[in-house]
Length: 454
Ligand SMILES: Cc1cc2nc3c(=O)[nH]c(=O)nc-3n(C[C@H](O)[C@H](O)[C@H](O)COP(=O)(O)OP(=O)(O)OC[C@H]3O[C@@H](n4cnc5c(N)ncnc54)[C@H](O)[C@@H]3O)c2cc1C
Image (cartoon, rainbow, N blue to C red; front, side):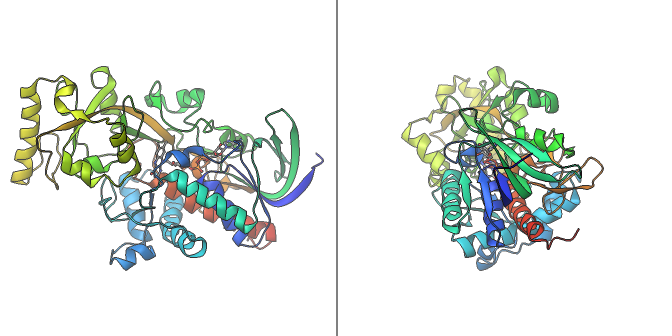
């Protein structure tokens, strides 16, 4: 195929993974072209809170937090019950701190350690970082500003529709499609797929994630899995396609993600009868299923003013407050005696320092009257399976052999969450996107410069 022009590194997808991959490749001294199908960058990244777990960061060290890549690796293996790729897990765990420190030091990303996000849901250390008072949309805008400042070329409204390969299997270039149907062919030395996951593709979810069939999807529509399918179409292997992050605390009807802090500070979940049904602190992702199993597929979070105040700095909390979304707990319609008994069980366990009837160990006090409530539903947020890669983000075939010059990162690549929904560690979505994005960007640049070991 004749190409209209050529560029050393092409990155498809302008979310966190693609933006960071492009920035890393550019920092390594090569020309980069970023392709984004939307008119403005948004993606799942902009729907997120922008929280990112990272180990061994300068921010942790400044607060005396004892953490490193090996500890995060151990937490990943524990959370996934050993059912994730240890090579990739080690690369992400050890690469997370340097990736965040690089974004902060070299690019000025104003992230700090979120000291209120206590070690929980599988993290044994204080290691969730974020931009105080800001969200994933702010982070993505920041990254795109840096792309422009560092001279990365960006084509918006440019949808990757084909990877063009030669007889040796090398990606020689890509074909993009414009909204008017026009097509361009662009040559490249290396290509990076950062096109997000597939949670927005009903057929793919139906095929690969039978336990989430019919679950509400609360993510970006661009996650249609095309990049994954294109990579697989030229020989890329797929792995852990049943992996995803579910969430049990999407407020209904507001559609706003209730921050996990509402649970970590002492909130609890009940159903329409006022009964608990799970240890809310056990799993941030697999809780989707107990919530979906409640009458009408709905649950309520019960909290008080103290808990609400502890989360008041988070954007989603502010939005819910502006909407006056929280109601008195009597709005649930549950039998008051039953809700009282539920609270009494939690309080007794808290005072006696033992697990309650759901197995929850109460580090913070349960809520006190006057009780407040928000109605919740379960939803699938993003997938964690995808193209199989090595620790540089290089796409591997089904037998584990690397494809010549194709990389993947973020939702397009298999992450380190095991085979299902129960292996997800909080803030691993952005961590994986940013860390593998950086590693893929650096490796793709080295390959384009001819210094990548073959
Ligand atoms: C509500 C919500 C909250 C979340 N909160 C957090 C959080 O706080 N912390 C965390 O770690 N994770 C969180 N996540 C998950 C996290 O957002 C994702 O894991 C992460 O953003 C994935 O980044 P990405 O760059 O791979 O995908 P995206 O951000 O979705 O970017 C992919 C981009 O590729 C573009 N694209 C797709 N196909 C093509 C194509 N063929 N050609 C060109 N462009 C294409 C899309 O338009 C999109 O812009 C959350 C998810 C949701 C839904």
